[in-house]
Image (tube, rainbow, N blue to C red):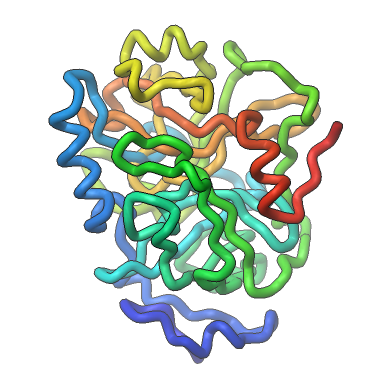
Length: 305
C-alpha cells in the first residue's frame, strides 16, 4: 500500500487506476495554516482597513446526503509542512477546477506543489467508501492562471489534470459550467457552497463528512459595501453570509452552484473574512464565467455555445 504522508511516495505517480491510495489523515491540515498563506495574511492585514484575511469553512450549514454533490472533490496537496485540504470540482474525466492557492506553494503560478490526491465520490472522506475514487496528480498537471497573485488575491484559479481518468458513476459526475453566451451575473439566485472544511467555530476541526450551506448570491456593488474595492472586481462573485452560513477554512477551491436546469457552477471559493466565518461577511469567489475561455484553453473542457 502507498501512503500520503508529509512526503508523497513517488510511486504514486505510476499507480494504476485500480490501486487504492491510503491516506494518513493525521498529516492533513487546513490550507490556510501553510507558510505561503500566512505570508499573504500578514500583508493583507496591513493593506486595508476592511476585512481582508481569508478563512474558509462551511459553518452553520448541514450534512449533505450521499451523492448529493457528485461533482465535489476533496483535494489533498503536498506542501513542505504537510498535506493541505481543499475543495475542487469535477469538470471532465481528466480535470478538476480549484483555487490557485490550493496547488501553489508561493504567491504566483510559478510555484506548483509537487502533487497530491483528488478524492471523488466521498461522503465521509476518511472512510474507505466503495463510492470513492482516489486519483493522484503531479506538478506537471497543475496549471494556475498566469495572473495569479496571492497577495492581492487576483486570478485565484487553477485546473489540475489527474494521472488517471475519472470513471463516472451515480456518485461522481461533472458539474455544468455556464455557456459562452451566458452573460448573467446570478445576483439573487440561491447559491450553494459545499466542502469538508471546519463546520463549527466553537469546535474548529475539519469535517469528516461533506457539508453545505445555501444563501443568496450578491451583486458586486452590495459586496463592495463590506469589502475593500481592491478586492472585489468583475472576476469575483460574492455569496451572502446571512445567518452565519459561509464557506471557510479548507473549503478553498470548492464549488458555488446555483440551480438552473440542474446545478450550475458559478464560483470557486477564494477568500472570506478573518473576523470569523460566521460573522455575516460575504465569501468571495472567482467568477467561473469570467474564466471560461481560460478554462477551455488549459483543459479538455468544452463550453456550450
